[in-house]
Length: 68
Image (cartoon, rainbow, N blue to C red; front, side, top):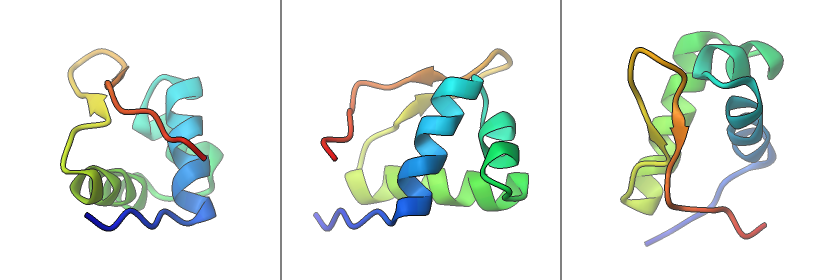
């Protein structure tokens, strides 16, 4: 498993958690919603596990934490 997140990925993840949604996180990171969603999906695929539980309400932090 190759986990190689760049600074934008890490920052986006923190902004999503702080903002309570991928939309808010992407906006704060100056990314489109599509770009933010794609980056989160890419991180999840790299880790082979969901980072967020998606639903109608704000996403919930998953069970995986980033060490760095």
